[in-house]
Length: 149
Length: 425
Image 1 (tube, helix red, strand yellow):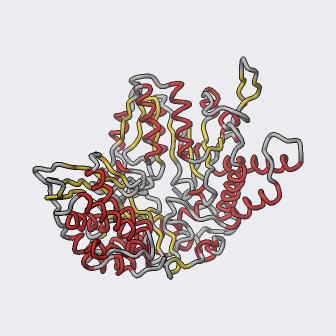
Image 2 (cartoon, rainbow over the protein chains, first blue to last red; image 1 turned 60 degrees about the vertical axis):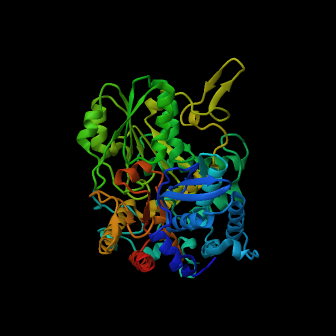
Image 3 (cartoon, each protein chain N blue to C red; image 1 turned 45 degrees about the vertical axis):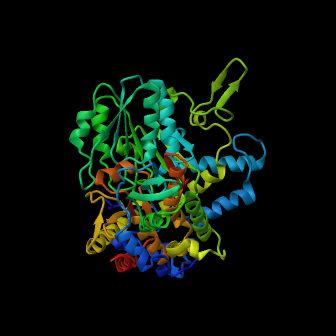
């Protein structure tokens, strides 16, 4: 699919790549998982602090491309303060946004995550955008490792 | 290496060297796939170390086999089977000639380099290696020349010794020499690194190994397509390569080995073709090369490989090498001028690989931007993660050259890298 590169690399996405939010480690994490994309070598380590079914804090470390880094950064903003049900609902909507062309999306639920909508035009990059979310799900399910394979 | 003689049918008299050795525009016409637009831009195919494109001669040979001659080989008395067998065995002769093997029976068809390496590790290794023995490889091996030995290591208890390399990507030969000892049972080394482009000094390495009676296996996947390769001049004992990197089809490749070694090795796989006689009590194995070719082989693939070799012989591998080296120099000069681009692999003896890293942008993002400009490159660790670790980087962008690439292709790459810098600053 031919798509304008600027749809993919929006300035705000590049800004998240340069200065990712919550790019740190948590002292008192309750949940943790590592995510790998074996294809490109992207690695992300995600930590959560969950209390009373709410994500009180979330942070990540690791390395990867701009898409995966910005996606992880946006994820931390999206799930901080959310219940695990809300976080999973966002994951589901985010997944739909990247895999179902012409889907009617709940843009209120997505919020800033919508800036990754352009990734749908780049099938080889969808895994980059979704890695952090698989890692989040693994952490919440009590699994140590998530991969995009 | 000398490029003095021109054995090709296409040229005559004194061979021109450097960029003048080849008119790529003439040969591009033989590769129909190159004539297309990708993402609205003319395709610039610079992923030849991953796989090369196929000339029409190869596509036609495969197509003609299925259209006219399809039959099983070495089986029927009927005419089609004879034709298929003749073409299949003629291709083996082409492989023999192409790598200057002493004997055609030493040429074994395999699925590719990976299978060639696995065959030797499994068959030779299981027969001769014992706990405490050592296999020497290098730090720039593809995973396919690491993992088969590691698996044997776990099974038998052999130890893997790894020859380090310098920042420019050249093996430290003193360290290599010191590693060879009376426990060393095999040296298995890549001829040209897929990630760095380094061409390793196989003759010198083989001589050192042979002084201690150690056989040498050569992974020639990246060298056979880009320079004249002569198994006898190299001093190899085993050498393997893939057809699809040699402008031939996927799923076929060749393993060459010294017949005295191959004869004493047990079969790799078993079934039809590889036996001479079977009763329920005993099986007598077939002779070389069939002993190592169990089951109906990739007949069309072998015929396609033979066609690719004939196509390349008509151009001349010395001309191809001369041209690609010159194009590499052009590309190296151009990329070196771009601020923020760090070339990974700058060995003096180097094939057409431009691996690079940019602090500003991840290789994956660079790959996407290049693709938007119609440029195909490989991004990632190139199945050589230890090489990436050596340089402390997760991945590189790799532009890899073929004789159908032009200086215009390099110029397009440079322009697209400028675009990367625009986007990522």
